[in-house]
Structure formats: C-alpha cells, structure tokens
Length: 372
Ligand SMILES: *Cc1c(COP(=O)(O)O)cnc(C)c1O
Image 1 (spheres, protein in one colour):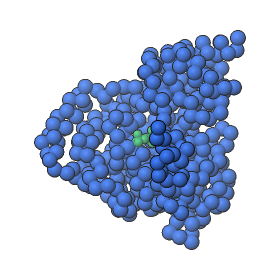
Image 2 (cartoon, protein in one colour):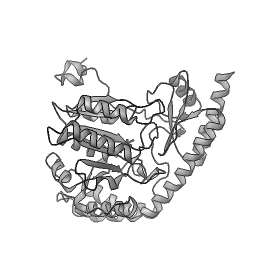
Image 3 (cartoon, protein in one colour):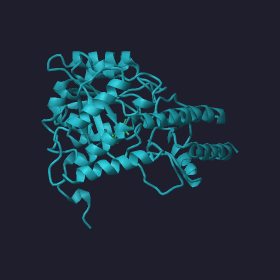
Image 4 (cartoon, protein in one colour):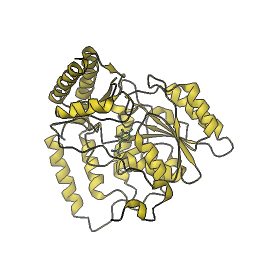
C-alpha cells in the first residue's frame, strides 16, 4: 500500500500529522470552541433569501475584492472595537486560517521565520510549516501569561519576520495587555531594523468574549501591526468559513499579491453580509456565553479544579496527573473536551447551560473517582 512517505512530498512535511480535533459523535461536544447556539431563524431565512439572489448570478465570478462585505465588516469593527476603520483597512478570506495563511505567504515563506508564545493556537505553527516559514516556539510563564522580558529576549535572539500574539489566547483563555503587544511590536521592529521591520499579527479570534476592550486601536499609526478576527466563534458561524483582518491599507494591498483570484465565493460573501445584519442578536448570545464561561470558571474552582482566568468562550482546567486519562474519563461520561497536549490541563468550550451542567456533573464524578 502506498503511504504518504512513498510520495514525493516536501521534506518538512514527512512524518507530520494534520490538524485534527477529533470529530466524535458524543452527546455533549465541547471541544472545538464552537458557539452552541444555532443561527436564529430570522437570520436563516435572510441567508436563504440572499443566497437565492446570489444564485441568479453564479454564472459570474464573485466580486474579487468583496467590497460590500469589507464595508460591512469595517462598520462592525468601527461600532464595536474602538477604532473607526474603513473598508480599505479590512480584508476577508475563508476563515481566519486563510487570512493567516495569506499573511504568511506574503510576509513569511522560505528563509523567513515566525514566532509564537506557546502553548498557543497550534495552527500558527502548522500554517507556518505549510508556507515554508520556520517556526520558533517562544516562552510563556507558568501561569500562561507572556513574560515581556523573556519574549523580548526571544525576539532579539531569533529576529523573526512574523510575530503571533493570540489574545485571548487559545487554549489557555489568557488575554494579553495592550502594553505587552506594544512592547513586543517595538522589540520586533528593533530586531529587524536592518530590513523593513517585522509583521506583528494579533489573533483576536475570541475578542468579542473578552473582559477587555479590543486591541484594534493599536493598529493606528502602526502599519506592521495586523488584527485578525473571525465569524467562527462570536458570530456562531464556524460552518460559514469567514475570517478577516484589520490593518493599514498597505497590508491589504500586500496580501492581494498572494490571494487566489475570486477566493471568497459569492455565497460566502452574501451569507456573511446577512449575518452582519443580525449582529445585535448574535452579540446577545455572546453575552449569554460570557456568563456561562464565568459560571464554569467559578464552579470548576468550587469542585477543586485549577482554572486559568479566561477571556474567551472556553476554559482551561486541571491539573490532572494524566490529562489524557481525564479526557478519556469525561468522554466515557458522554462529554467531549479538548486535550491540547498542555501537560496537566484540558480545555472545555462554554456550551448551553444544559451542556455545561452535564460537563460539570461529569467532572464531579471524575474527581470523586480519582480521589477515591
Ligand atoms: C478558532 C480560532 C481561529 C478561527 O479560525 P477560522 O479559520 O476563522 O475558523 C483563529 N485563531 C484562533 C486562535 C482560534 O482559536
């Protein structure tokens, strides 16, 4: 039988595994940070209407520059994220993963490097590898915050071309202070003062769930700072595949050099526009999820778990002597959480109140069993 390694694949892909959160059929699935609320019926109807309209023109390529959608996203950011931005500062793609890939194709690539502070979102390293960008694993404190001095040292030593800062961080839930982002941004520019500087990507996929204001205002006057967002979490539209960035218009011009022509289908564009029409309802769900997230944190602490403070729609909890055994123990009780490979810790997504209750019951049982 032919295996991958019998094929002429690139050397750096040999022996590697693809991104793979298990998609198991379990009663309570709290493992991929999805929003547990289906889209509201009026929005579903509106999507059907707009898709039907778009279907009449599917013989044509879509708007290559997605101007109407970028205008809508710019308006949303201006209203909710603390900085007035224009459509020329916004770019959209198929999930923020594609946004990140386009950024790495533009600013990373062979002979270049990217750094992230781990544990963090594993796709930053995977997309780096996929684009031929060298990956540097930067440090974090034991409490999962970023140590500014240590991070600065790593940047000065490795002189990366791209710096990833995830806030709130996945899988830990940790928000990053604006001063930290600025310190790392400045350190990265100093380290690459011999060239045109370094690109700093703030991945704010969970921004809407944070206790803190968005880091969007930091892009003002900093053309090498990019903010990345997604409709997969707060907008409850993971199946849509729509991510976007906000940055200096020059960054938006730069990613045009690598984006595939007509990368964003007409169906995707109108569906995202319909979702934006229902922003207020969807942000109402976000408020409910934030309350459930806070409840998970306090109840897990009452049960006797350690919990990392969370600004996202998920909670990192532990500490288990064998996190994978604990993961399996919860799965045996019908609850799927995520083992991100952080020793001692697991991650649970905030679901509906009933799902969270089922999860908490399963943890209580597990704790009883393991302490017995
Ligand atoms: C979920 C997530 C994303 C979202 O990816 P999409 O491609 O937009 O679905 C991006 N960054 C982080 C840190 C995430 O956890």
